[in-house]
Length: 553
Image (cartoon, rainbow, N blue to C red; front, side, top):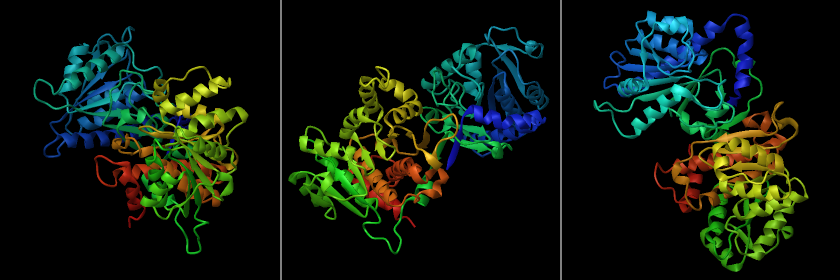
């Protein structure tokens, strides 16, 4: 589990130590961790693994983030790396700059800068213009991005923005003229310009191969689009860890999924393991019923009960004979949880069953064809955290259109807005609907307005989780149906066992089990997407990968 925090939380944890005069010690610890990762990245570019003879360019901002970069540069220089610092502001961290120069590094001042007169400290340095700075970066083995840190907002501006835009434009055109490959990029704390609190990524951005952050992960590291910009994440302890408050986002990882996934005990029965009712499929989309029921079976549901017409029932039974099929109505059968909506398009009888599921007391996964009906139902009151909505960005935009019709949301939330800040819009949807919202994407975000022991910390209105690691090959028709079946399985289990997921943390007890179950299901889906190696992941075989993941020794 990775706990991610807002920039304000990190700064609040640092302040007591800064007040006690430990600022230099904190920066040295951070810089040594950054230098270790830089050395590891440099070795990837070296034929013999040696650092001596390699080169690095450090882009340095005026604040402590720049200081971290300068100190890290001094440590690299002492190990034989040629280090050039390009100072992008009108000032620089004094001790860090002195350390770099004393170690034999070079410092240059980027022309243009902020428009301010350079400090006396920088006035004697040689100036480099943007094209020449791009040339230095292109010729280096490593570029360290230490321009902006967690306190910045609004993205890069001025000469630093011009530099990054020019460098990334040249990078897209291929290797440099001297035949060198593209340098490795390491971000100090976070990619400059990212919003630490939301993960928003205003352009231009210098996308990194790796990010080294200090004390704890920031929200931007574990949600899209920030996660995709930062590469592999390393968290360096610096001594503030015990001073941190409640996290903004819990990041559920693969090992958490395998540790927490519900497994039957010796005394369990098919009923105590969880009975899942499924309303899915229609004449135009019968495959959805097959894929979601098969996924539920493979994920370990105690029983799966499918409701649909005779054609759909026959197709489901042909693939999964253990599924109990009927043409009953939801109020006629007993289940611990429901899954409704996959492939339900243009079928009035299935649509009526979907509405019954929405109105039922049991928890439910509401997917695809159930989302519009769920949004309309908000007019009668909040859905409750035990109802899990599973939209992608386009479907969430449609949900907001319905909410706007009820006067609960502004008129339009475009898909592009949601993709630019998925955490915010998932939280907003959870707040307005009262439901747990699982927003699918490159990084899946779960937001839930839970109460009681699982309630979020002060200043937050939702419990938020994120899940990553899914193969991009999952972006195909039908993979969402498989996810829905997995989600339904774990939801049915935790409906019967309220504290089954407490291993994840105290927040996953009671009402917190609903968002925890949603994140766990998304995590298993992600693991299954890579179980067969990197390549196409047909949803028809993805369910079998689910079982393979759960049966690993």
